[in-house]
Image 1 (cartoon, rainbow, N blue to C red):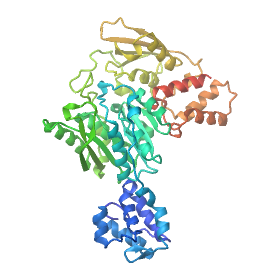
Image 2 (image 1 turned 135 degrees about the vertical axis):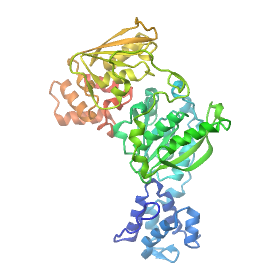
Image 3 (image 1 turned 120 degrees about the vertical axis):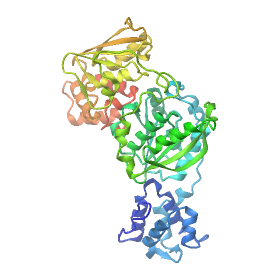
Length: 501
């Protein structure tokens, strides 16, 4: 093994295959290795020797030696033989390495995006920043064929990177359903997932990413949570990277130290910091700018990661009721389930009688997710009085349209606590064809939707026909093995309507 964890003892029949195996093992960090190979094909500017290759491409000597040893039979002095050059250039993407990359202009896309939610610490990055991030990521990492997970994406970095490299698979996980629906409309190839990261990452994303990008809330708790969930998303635990935007005021270095310690507490190593890389419309307290951090995991990262994240605080933001100074909640339902009980694990089923859920700290999306997650005959949910799903008759009707096949809903504002309202949910029975879908929100969606369609058809659809229809309705292969709970709200509504048609 080299110092980068790259095997130097691979034996195959063809030298180019041996080189390819070394490059593949470097994952998204293989770009510099490909640049070394490209240099070996340049007869107009041949390298002066091993020292030049190491210094020019910032690749450890042992790694360069392994590449040269693997390519040995195809080498003629310091260069590849002329007859081998075309094969190596094609195999290792010579043209891609040298193609000019232009930052996309997302000015209009950003202007049309959903308004910032300051309770979620949304501060919009400039269009120039989104484009600069995309180009830098594609020039730094081997993105083609890789999987990027954006942990939160109010800045629309996902759309910018996809425009620079359409061969990249991108997933976005966010708590803002408006944003997820907007991103999906702009680029249907981006997989969008709903999650409140305080309660976990969508299971379908765990261990799938090569690269993670996040611009988290600028608190120690927020950074620890978002970066930690990003680490859970990494599939390549050796070469994967976590890229984070974070800034602090030069007037408050102690806060910057606290945040950097939060990253270190996850046993991540920071291998680069690009100062003032990101610029914002707002955030003037930190100079409307933030640095770009590049972190990578160590073997110790995984030993206590889940345990550390299990203690995530509800108060992670700098503004609103769930800021560090906020006091969400304050009301109490005796014996009620807490949000962590509802969203932090598997299916929640109350086989008989009634159950309560205390959602007094609900920032908006918890109510619907609780109705999906809990199966009970009767359910009482305590929510903020100004909850967006109770704001007016249209909002209440919209919630009923999504969840009405599972629960009959009643809203009561007249409670002893004027700051909160009660939602009463009674099991609606199985008469609605969408009921099966909603009562199996934790199951694999492909299987659940298939069964829902069969039931809705009165048994006229065969399993194969229903399976094909489910795949068509889901529209995204990644959703077949996902849970209904993890889909954006508009997607849940579309599936409810489809189950009834």
